[in-house]
Image (cartoon, rainbow, N blue to C red; front, side, top):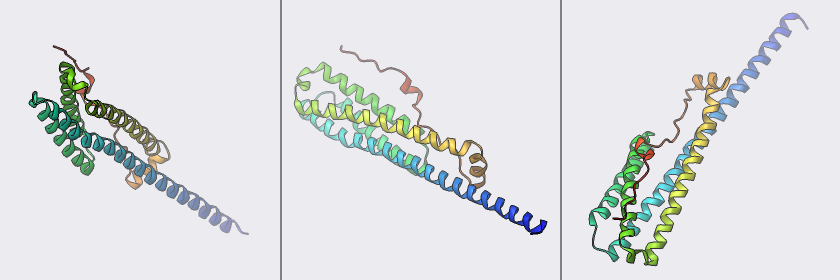
Length: 195
């Protein structure tokens, strides 16, 4: 073999390795991006579960007490606002408004739970207690789903921010994804009053 043929084989071999690396990086980033989207879907599923439980909780409370309607209305309105923000976040990818609406919803629900401390006869109702337990379980599921989402985002971001993935990510248009972060209001501990 002459020197030109050897050079051509080496060049073709190097180009083949680069093409395989590019293809592997693209496929890996695409799958990681899909995993992030899937985990966000899991977060939405858990929030949807919460939204589905709240009307049952409100109906149960209304069946046993016709007082404190402002609290019940606030929970219902906060639920509707959070559901609308969740749908909007799913379409736009911007979770900031959704985060704010869930803080409002959480505050309204804390008011509802504080109300039950003032009226112990409501707590004796087994249906109400069961719904409270389900709601608490839902909150735990939401926390787990958000944690899983952030872990998936971390894995994805490593692929698109570390060399050589960073090179291929910029070439193919992949960008880092945002972590799920609490709003500033969520950092303040809730105050429970039994007055």
